[in-house]
Image (cartoon, rainbow, N blue to C red; front, side, top):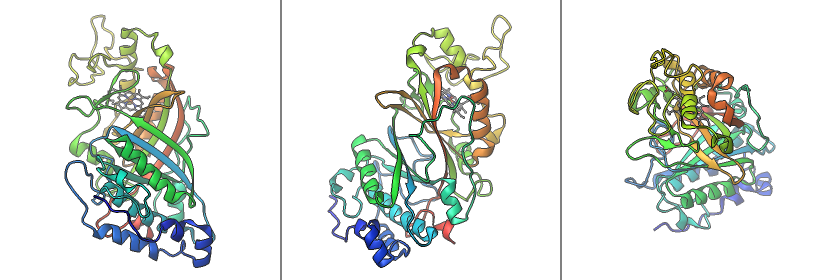
Length: 389
Ligand code: HEM
């Protein structure tokens, strides 16, 4: 059973403008470091239901996709003094929060620590926008470019900071998002909260998206996935780090309803019924763009989604980890993909799709952002420590 922590509330230490101004606490990071160490010296529970906070990579990237996710974006409220030190203190604090929550404990001064247990495979995956990389002077991932057809809405912008929260339990997830958000309240301004859900198909890393299609079939697996996402230490912005492309696509489901089965399958290049490619008969068959049908025409049209999305070469491979969303007004796909270098993979693929994908008829991109995902850390460390030399 997790016990409430009786330490001094962290918002008093780091969150209050008055306290920070009086003590200069935000620019120093001793308090944050003490907390990170306190969190990490306790033995982290392992076993089913727990994902590790410590490791070579952050969790929530190449490990199995949980059924529920919340992506939250914040901008930093800078105070006087060194931005680099403020960012460092914030990352130490977040590391402490993430380590505690992923091991089923509340954050410091948590008002509902009981809600953290069991964590139900909770992961917090932390990323920085280029604006924060610039503060550290380390690395470049750049900004997400504009794509044809974008109709971006102000409520889904690029943010300085992003956390992808995932869990099998939406209650645990809600608590984790709220606990972290409360701790960040005075240090940041929240820019968006995007909630998603999916249900894996039995025995597979696939799910039905809200068009009804089987999604995730040709995601890379095992070593190919790891290589696509993290590379060999040379071809990512930082060893053991990666990038996240986050795009929000609204689906026009009323107009999709009007499309018959053949039209739907043609637009995707796979059958909605069982996910098999139009160039084969089983879901395990390859997407063969040279295959022809009985009329001598390509089985998969040149502008079908899978034809344009298929990596042109190994360097274009991405790992998709997206979620369905329904915010009450709109529904669609919260597209999320991890790749070691978005500039040579996600971005060219997205340009191809934006220009000609047959699915575009029913899709509107309304949100778009790119993040540098921090490397994993060993016990006793904090996320982002490699950026501070
Ligand atoms: C709402 C938007 C989207 C929907 C509904 C969608 C749906 C699908 C579906 C159903 C498949 C076939 C099954 C599979 O292999 O996963 C697929 C494949 C794929 N999609 Fe998307 N997708 C969307 C956006 C994107 C975007 C933005 C990208 C990247 C820029 C992308 C990249 C891919 C890739 C790489 C494949 C595998 C192609 C192959 O090698 O066979 N998709 N998508």
